[in-house]
Structure formats: structure tokens, C-alpha cells
Length: 561
Image 1 (cartoon, rainbow, N blue to C red):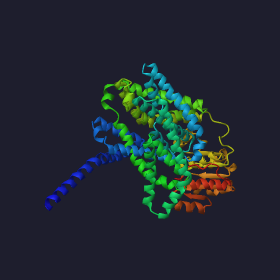
Image 2: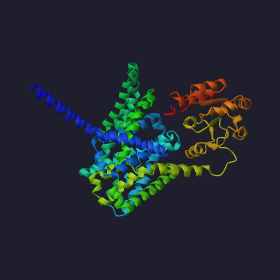
Image 3: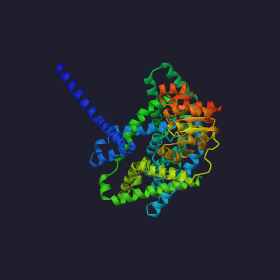
Image 4: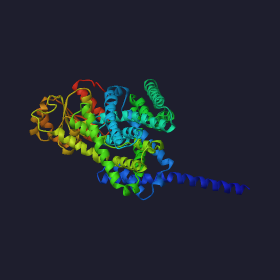
């Protein structure tokens, strides 16, 4: 009997192990394939998002979509989006929410009314039921938070005007998406719509209030207690707990998980421990988010794509073209410049993951022809895949329009700060100066970097500061602070004797790539910042303000490099 019991236990153990292996196998397979897709994308100079979406579509074309549609993969994908929104919340402190209220509730409302309303009217004119036209139309007005925030982070645009406006609009769209989901739920249950929407609004306000209380009274004491423990694992666990628990709480309240994750990040945004929390979350965010993009690629129906390619192609092109046009119109009505409106409009020109959820609800899908709904879902998924390409077109077009005819006077001609090199460090300094209403002029000899900075709205000119003949045109003698952010110390080493002669009273600050370069630059009389250490961009910015003898008016979250 003991042998029999042991044998049964062994078989049960092997059976349990087999179940575990079967459960985690899809996730492990996708993880390995995702690494290959990311490496291939980098080799082809493409955004990794394109690689993940392409991988998902490739697996779906091989008929393997069902093999990777398990609950574990879905949970990891959902966690990736939650971590993304938590990270976005970390950059939106209460102060910034107040500062960006015009963009969130003004620009965001305008964009949804124009884009969502425009699509709703078009669907109604094509003979679709009014309820479907309103829900699907405003759903098409939404943009993808995951894709757009991923692109913004990839390009270092978090704190430039286009990046801030896009993030603010996406926050409002997440709120609008909740209302759409509530509307669809009331439609399915046959209940009264007005009370359902009122209850959702009350829950959202309550969640925001709880986040404010947590930020004011609990965040600092909690992390101070954890800091005394001095255990890295506790930091990681706490960061994960806040992100996931906040999303779970709003999900249990009938709101979206992503709204809770955003509010959880916002509760930590003003904390002195924000950078540490962001560091702990980033690794999980990037890893889990790849599962989301692969899942989107898996949702594309290859059979439908082959059979009704003309319908899918027409819907995809029409949706992207109209969405970009609606967004540009909203930007112009919000008194944005034409280049800025174009760049923002193209950046937000794709469909949304929320719309895929809406169209999957039987109460919504049953109002239209199944073939049309399937084609719309496929078109939205394809629009997510081509977002990097579409947004690059808008960015380059905006750059060309901004360049325009040469001015006789440089933009920022009288600015006290001259920034050389629009690298991430240079952009961080420019963002902080602009937020504190301090003028700057940026120059960059790298044409591609110059074009991208120009498209993003920076005061930048294409010039080669390594040629002393350009110094008079640049006006280096009129500046108070010179910031070298290119990361190249060779030119500074060669030009230091001439610089000391031509600009003896100017503070020369340089972003040094490592400690040895920083030591060499200090010996030459420059003020170096070792960028290899954590928080390099923040220290560089603080040194600029200290050299100017001014205080920063508005702290800019997320400057730490």
C-alpha cells in the first residue's frame, strides 16, 4: 500500500507538472519568438512594435492563433498595457494634471467630438443603425494608448509639446472608452443608459479622489518604510503591487483596468521614490507589452484578409486617412500650428485596442453585418501595425513645413542658453528651460537629428559648431550658458583654447559619456556631468539652472536618463 500511494503521488506530480508545462508553453514560445522579432526589427531599422505585430500575423497565417490564445498569454498582455499606463501615470503628477487640464479636457474633448462624431455621421450615412454608428463611430475616434505611448517613449518625446498633447488626449480617450463600454453594456442588458453612465462617472471620480489621498498622505510614508528595509526585492514587489492592484480595484468597480493603473502611477508621481519605482516597472513593462502587440497581430483574420482584401484595404486606408484629417482639423481648431497639427494628427491616426473590445461585444457586433464587423476589426489591427510608418510620414512632413524659408534672425536669437546637440540629454534641457520660460537656441550638425527635433517643435537650427567660423552667426558670445550634449568630447578638447579666448565669461557645460571623459573635461575648465550615472539628464538640467542663477519654475517628470 505505501508503494501504491507513492506511485499514485508520483503520477499525480507528473500530471500536475504536465499541466503546468502545457499552461506556460505558449508564453515561453511567444517570448522566444518575440526576442527574434525584436532583433530582426532592429536589424531592419524598424520599431520593435512592427516586429511583434508581424510575428502575430505570421502565426495567425499559419493557423496557430488558437494555440496562443490561452488565459496566461491574455493575462500577460493585459498586464503589459497596465504597466504602460502606470508608467504614463508616473509622468502625470497632480501638478501636471492641473497644468495639462486644457489639453486633457479641452483638446481631448475636441478631438473626440470631431473624430468620433465624424465617423459616427459617416457610418449613419452609409445606412448602419444609429446606435451602432454612435458606438462604433466614437470607438473609431479612439487611438491606441499602447502603440502611441510606446512610440513616444521610443523617440524620447515624452516632454516635447507633441508628446505631452498626445498623452493628454489619450488620457481623455481612456475616460471616453469607459463611457463607451458602459453604453455597450447597458445596450446588452437592456437597462437604462443614463443611470449607468452616471454611476460610471461617480466611480471614476471616487477612484481619482482615492488616488489623490494616497498621493498626499500615504505614498511617502509607505516608501520610507520600505527604504528602511533596504531590500531591492521589496521595492520590486511594491511597484508591481501598486500597478496591478490599482488596475484590479478599478476593474472590480466596473471601470477599466488601465484607468486604475494610470491613477496608481499618478499617486506615486510626486514621490521622491518615483524614479526608483519607474526603474523597477520598466523591465516588466517592455517584456509584457510585447505579448500585447503579438496578441493584436494574432487577432488579424488571414482568411478574411485574403478573401475580402479589397474591403479590408479600403477600410484601412479610409479609416487612417479620415482619422488623420479629423485629428489635424482638431489641432487647427485648438489653435495649433499646421506642422504641429499634422504631426499630432498622424501620430494618433490609428485605431484603438478598446475599439477591438467594443466590436467583440455581441450586443454591438449584432447590430451590423458580420462581414463588415470582421473587416473593421482586421482594419483596426492593421492600422496599429502601420502606425510607426504613418507617424513618421507626419513627422517628416511637419519638419519640412516648420523649416520653411530661412529667417534673417535665428529663433531664440536672444536666448541665454545655447544647446549643442538635440540628443535625449539636449532635449531634456530644452524641455526644462521651456517649462520654466527660459529661452534657448539649439543647434545640431546631424541632419536626421536636426529634422526630428525640428518636427517636434524645438528651436533648433542645422549648424556645425565644430567650425569656429559659424560661432559669430550662432552668436555664442551673447549667451550665458553653453551646453554640449552631443556626447562627443573630442571637438570640445580641440576647441577649448579658442573657446576660452572668445567666450571667457560663459559657463560651458558638457554631457560626458563616462567618468574618465568627465575628469578630462573638468581639467580643461568645463563643467562636466557624467551621463553614465543614473539621473544624468536631471543633473545636467540642474547645473544649467544653477549657472543661470535661476530656479526651475515647473519640475519636469521623467528627465532622469
